[in-house]
Length: 175
Image (tube, rainbow, N blue to C red; front, side):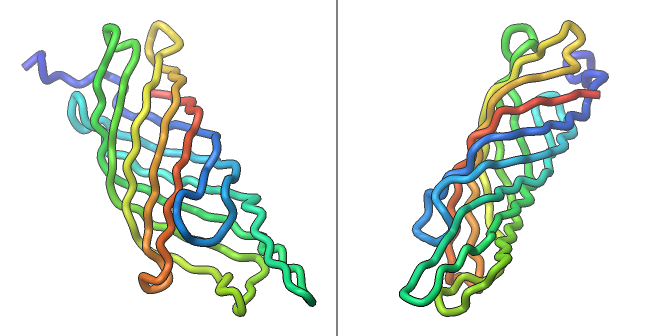
Protein backbone atom coordinates (compact mmCIF):
# COMPACT_ATOMS: atom_id res chain seq x y z
CA UNK A 1 0.00 0.00 0.00
CA UNK A 2 2.82 2.44 0.83
CA UNK A 3 4.50 1.80 -2.54
CA UNK A 4 1.44 3.17 -4.34
CA UNK A 5 1.12 6.21 -2.07
CA UNK A 6 0.83 9.62 -3.69
CA UNK A 7 2.96 12.60 -2.72
CA UNK A 8 1.20 15.41 -0.86
CA UNK A 9 1.71 17.81 -3.77
CA UNK A 10 -0.27 16.41 -6.71
CA UNK A 11 -0.97 19.60 -8.71
CA UNK A 12 1.54 21.52 -10.82
CA UNK A 13 1.08 24.88 -12.54
CA UNK A 14 3.77 25.61 -15.13
CA UNK A 15 4.55 28.87 -16.94
CA UNK A 16 6.76 28.62 -20.02
CA UNK A 17 8.43 30.85 -22.58
CA UNK A 18 10.41 29.92 -25.64
CA UNK A 19 10.50 29.72 -29.40
CA UNK A 20 8.04 28.14 -31.85
CA UNK A 21 9.35 27.05 -35.23
CA UNK A 22 7.17 26.15 -38.23
CA UNK A 23 8.22 22.69 -39.49
CA UNK A 24 5.27 22.24 -41.83
CA UNK A 25 4.75 23.16 -45.47
CA UNK A 26 2.11 25.83 -44.83
CA UNK A 27 2.04 29.58 -44.32
CA UNK A 28 2.55 31.74 -41.34
CA UNK A 29 6.10 32.65 -40.60
CA UNK A 30 9.07 30.49 -39.70
CA UNK A 31 9.76 31.23 -36.02
CA UNK A 32 8.02 33.22 -33.31
CA UNK A 33 8.13 33.74 -29.55
CA UNK A 34 5.98 31.33 -27.56
CA UNK A 35 4.25 31.70 -24.19
CA UNK A 36 2.47 28.86 -22.40
CA UNK A 37 0.68 27.92 -19.20
CA UNK A 38 -0.36 24.43 -18.13
CA UNK A 39 -1.91 22.54 -15.25
CA UNK A 40 -1.04 18.92 -14.42
CA UNK A 41 -2.68 16.65 -11.87
CA UNK A 42 -0.82 13.53 -10.72
CA UNK A 43 -3.42 10.75 -11.06
CA UNK A 44 -0.94 7.90 -10.43
CA UNK A 45 2.59 7.91 -9.02
CA UNK A 46 4.12 8.25 -12.52
CA UNK A 47 1.24 9.61 -14.60
CA UNK A 48 -0.12 13.15 -14.94
CA UNK A 49 -3.34 14.37 -16.54
CA UNK A 50 -2.38 17.66 -18.22
CA UNK A 51 -4.04 20.57 -20.05
CA UNK A 52 -2.78 23.98 -21.06
CA UNK A 53 -2.65 26.79 -23.56
CA UNK A 54 0.27 27.79 -25.78
CA UNK A 55 0.35 30.88 -27.99
CA UNK A 56 2.62 32.53 -30.51
CA UNK A 57 2.53 36.14 -31.51
CA UNK A 58 4.54 38.25 -33.89
CA UNK A 59 4.65 35.65 -36.64
CA UNK A 60 5.58 38.38 -39.09
CA UNK A 61 3.64 36.99 -42.04
CA UNK A 62 3.78 39.52 -44.87
CA UNK A 63 2.44 39.25 -48.41
CA UNK A 64 3.72 41.67 -51.04
CA UNK A 65 2.62 42.35 -54.54
CA UNK A 66 2.94 45.11 -57.12
CA UNK A 67 0.11 47.13 -55.58
CA UNK A 68 -0.15 45.84 -52.01
CA UNK A 69 1.82 45.03 -48.89
CA UNK A 70 -0.21 43.05 -46.33
CA UNK A 71 1.10 42.54 -42.79
CA UNK A 72 -1.20 39.83 -41.47
CA UNK A 73 -0.89 40.45 -37.70
CA UNK A 74 -1.39 36.70 -37.26
CA UNK A 75 -0.99 34.36 -34.29
CA UNK A 76 -1.54 30.75 -33.24
CA UNK A 77 -3.22 29.51 -30.08
CA UNK A 78 -3.01 25.83 -29.15
CA UNK A 79 -4.87 24.02 -26.36
CA UNK A 80 -3.18 20.65 -25.70
CA UNK A 81 -4.73 18.07 -23.36
CA UNK A 82 -3.55 14.56 -22.57
CA UNK A 83 -1.40 12.31 -20.41
CA UNK A 84 2.21 12.68 -19.34
CA UNK A 85 4.42 9.86 -18.03
CA UNK A 86 6.90 11.00 -15.35
CA UNK A 87 10.19 9.26 -14.49
CA UNK A 88 11.68 10.47 -11.16
CA UNK A 89 15.49 10.77 -11.12
CA UNK A 90 18.06 11.56 -8.42
CA UNK A 91 15.81 10.63 -5.48
CA UNK A 92 12.84 12.62 -6.82
CA UNK A 93 14.85 15.82 -7.22
CA UNK A 94 14.73 15.64 -11.03
CA UNK A 95 12.13 14.27 -13.43
CA UNK A 96 12.10 13.29 -17.09
CA UNK A 97 8.73 13.24 -18.82
CA UNK A 98 7.06 12.35 -22.11
CA UNK A 99 3.46 12.79 -23.08
CA UNK A 100 0.90 13.30 -25.76
CA UNK A 101 -2.76 13.70 -26.51
CA UNK A 102 -5.29 15.83 -28.33
CA UNK A 103 -4.97 19.42 -29.50
CA UNK A 104 -7.27 22.27 -30.47
CA UNK A 105 -5.65 24.87 -32.74
CA UNK A 106 -6.81 28.39 -33.58
CA UNK A 107 -5.04 30.52 -36.19
CA UNK A 108 -6.14 34.16 -36.05
CA UNK A 109 -5.46 36.78 -38.71
CA UNK A 110 -5.87 40.46 -37.84
CA UNK A 111 -5.65 41.54 -41.49
CA UNK A 112 -7.17 38.78 -43.67
CA UNK A 113 -6.23 38.47 -47.34
CA UNK A 114 -8.55 36.08 -49.19
CA UNK A 115 -6.54 36.23 -52.42
CA UNK A 116 -3.63 34.42 -50.74
CA UNK A 117 -5.75 32.21 -48.48
CA UNK A 118 -4.66 34.13 -45.39
CA UNK A 119 -7.80 33.75 -43.24
CA UNK A 120 -8.56 32.71 -39.67
CA UNK A 121 -9.16 29.01 -39.12
CA UNK A 122 -9.36 26.38 -36.41
CA UNK A 123 -9.33 22.62 -36.07
CA UNK A 124 -8.22 19.57 -34.17
CA UNK A 125 -5.01 17.62 -34.04
CA UNK A 126 -2.54 15.98 -31.67
CA UNK A 127 0.72 16.68 -29.88
CA UNK A 128 3.72 14.92 -28.34
CA UNK A 129 5.99 16.41 -25.70
CA UNK A 130 9.06 15.64 -23.65
CA UNK A 131 11.49 17.27 -21.30
CA UNK A 132 13.28 17.37 -17.98
CA UNK A 133 12.73 19.40 -14.83
CA UNK A 134 14.67 19.92 -11.61
CA UNK A 135 13.46 20.86 -8.12
CA UNK A 136 15.16 24.05 -6.94
CA UNK A 137 14.16 23.86 -3.27
CA UNK A 138 14.29 21.19 -0.57
CA UNK A 139 10.52 20.77 -0.35
CA UNK A 140 10.28 20.17 -4.13
CA UNK A 141 7.71 22.93 -4.51
CA UNK A 142 9.49 25.00 -7.22
CA UNK A 143 10.77 23.43 -10.45
CA UNK A 144 12.86 24.67 -13.40
CA UNK A 145 13.29 22.79 -16.64
CA UNK A 146 12.99 22.60 -20.37
CA UNK A 147 10.37 21.05 -22.61
CA UNK A 148 9.68 20.47 -26.28
CA UNK A 149 6.35 20.04 -28.03
CA UNK A 150 5.40 19.00 -31.54
CA UNK A 151 1.93 20.24 -32.49
CA UNK A 152 0.28 18.90 -35.61
CA UNK A 153 -3.23 19.84 -36.72
CA UNK A 154 -5.31 19.64 -39.87
CA UNK A 155 -7.46 22.74 -40.15
CA UNK A 156 -9.52 24.46 -42.82
CA UNK A 157 -11.56 21.26 -43.47
CA UNK A 158 -8.35 19.25 -43.81
CA UNK A 159 -6.77 21.46 -46.47
CA UNK A 160 -4.18 23.00 -44.15
CA UNK A 161 -1.64 20.86 -42.31
CA UNK A 162 0.06 22.86 -39.55
CA UNK A 163 3.21 21.49 -37.91
CA UNK A 164 5.01 23.44 -35.18
CA UNK A 165 7.99 22.50 -32.99
CA UNK A 166 8.21 24.44 -29.73
CA UNK A 167 11.13 24.60 -27.28
CA UNK A 168 10.38 26.21 -23.90
CA UNK A 169 12.01 27.05 -20.60
CA UNK A 170 9.62 26.11 -17.80
CA UNK A 171 8.94 27.32 -14.26
CA UNK A 172 6.59 25.16 -12.22
CA UNK A 173 4.94 25.42 -8.81
CA UNK A 174 3.68 22.26 -7.07
CA UNK A 175 0.99 22.22 -4.45
